[in-house]
Length: 259
Image (cartoon, rainbow, N blue to C red; front, top):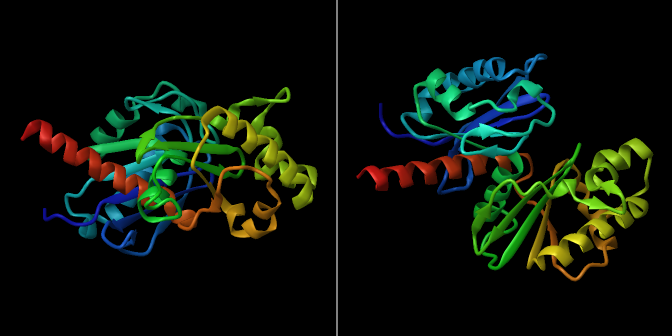
């Protein structure tokens, strides 16, 4: 089979989305496909849907690599935590499971890490040096850390304890909705969160992703922090694009090791 575009697949609590990615343009090479996440979202059930996505793009993908994101910590191909998916994922050797199902090499990464790679490669953080921190504000808070362009995986800084609370229970966009907070009220909590991150990491740039980033002008100007902070630009494409970037990089590394 001929080479084509690498495939990125983003597994979420409600939907599984995938698209081939043009790594020169930094965008989808074909319209994204979305399939509902199975109601019982076990690894096996989700793998079946991932296989449907792969089959759908078989011609345009060719023998190019496949990258998959999941909402959880992935360490050496093994899932360590599971957010918004079945707890049966914990301890699952997901890369082995997918490679056996698809008969193809697969790279599986944390969803926030993939989104961060997308933004660093083609989006709001492109060309930025030093320490860059992506935060995704949604049901929880996902984070991705990059030092001089190198990903530090599985940072999970949404779970920092701040003022006696798990940070994401107070500062995620879901907390704003749940508690009926105004943007100024929510911005006070965000400011506290970002100041703690500043004191821990001294970053050069914050990038804010998640669905609420489309309304960034409502809350980012309210934050009084020392670090430049900008909205993500790839929106809901970031995870898919980042997964494809990471899968391609992994394939190149394997090629060097076996060549």
